Every structure is written in structure tokens, then in C-alpha cells.
Image (cartoon, rainbow, N blue to C red):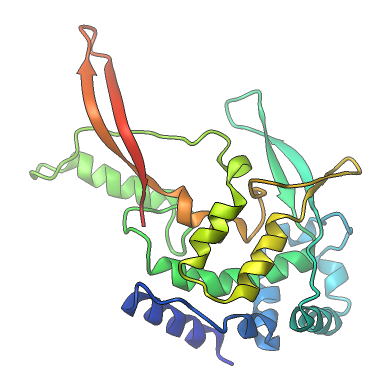
Length: 261
């Protein structure tokens, strides 16, 4: 199997047929080559040295890579694969006294998540707006800044006059699982893929030895988080009214937010 070629086919199909429902994707996930490419990508990440709740790191995996890949393949084919709870850690938020919760999956779960991303991302990419930049291949916040900077500095008639910053409070913590899977279903008809995503969403978190159920939200830090949240995360805003007070403070009254896809 050529993974790049298969991803290109998924992308082309999604682009050509915006209403197409993809079936028979789960077989890709179970393919040895697909899993090996996913494992290679995960192991190249600097976070591969950080263990989840089982203590396994990159060096442990490299002790028997063929055995671990074979085990994952067998579990996925039998549909008995069960993700472990993610390890909850907290890191400081920039310019804030609050801390950001991160979820660290075990290494084997990260490999399966990466294998899922390799399937889903080419499909989602065909649907997204050219104006969204977060968590997308070959795009970054720097690209967004460059785009905005050129529009603000332009002397043409299309120059922008306003920059609006929006933030969805506790977004990662509040994503509704059923609505998310319903959004995925619009493109992914393969029930086995959706069931596996559901398992990851419901895997739970462990903090200081205590496991807590996850009934909503997705853990920040998991590979599968960006691809699954893309259907709801990127948004635009329509402005209903602009008021400028005598001190030149500007109040923007948004009428509603809408997804950029």
C-alpha cells in the first residue's frame, strides 16, 4: 500500500463529491503499512518520550516494534481495541494564573489516533474554508497573520478596517460528543470508524490515580482531537452593529457565529 497515494485519492474524492459518504475506511486502519507509517510519525514527535498512564515511552516501543504493531493490528481487526484513559497534567497558561489541562494518551493509543488522523484529515480538508488556519497541514498562525497583515496594509479597495478576536470559553472541555459524531457522520458512513472515535472520546481521564469519565469534551494534547473538532471549531462572525463612543472606544455587537466549512 502507498499511503500518500491513498490519502490523495481520499482528498480527490472528497473534493470532487462534497456530499459523498465514505465507506470501507476501517480496513485502512488495520493495514500493517498504515499502522507503521502512523507509528513512525508518532515516534518522530518530541512528545513520544512522554508516557501515558501505562508508563510506555518511545524507547520501550522500539524494544519490540513489530510485536506492538502486530498486536494493534490484531486488536483493531477483531474490533476489541479499547483506548486507555488519558493522563491529566496541568501546564501554566501564558499571562494568566490559570492552568491549562492536557491529556496524554498512552503511546499505543497515539499510534491509533494518528492512523485515524491519516484517514480523516484528507476528507475534512476538502470541506474547510480557505480562511481557516488552525490545526491544518501546511498552515499555521503565522500564515493567518501574514494574510491579515497584507489586507490591513493594502491600499486597494479590499483593505480591511477591523480585526476581531473571538474565543470560545473552555472549548475543548465542552464539545458535545453526540453532536460531534453526528457531524462526522455527514462524511463518514463507516460505522467502525465512528465507533472507534466514540471510544476515544469516552476513554476517560486519570489524575493522581483517580479515573474520571469523559461525558463531554476532548483532551487537549491528543492527536485525534484536532481532526474530530474541526467540524465545529472554526468560525466566522457577522457584526450586527458597531458603536463608537466619544472616547473612540469601539464596541462590536456580534449577531451570530457560524462555522467556516
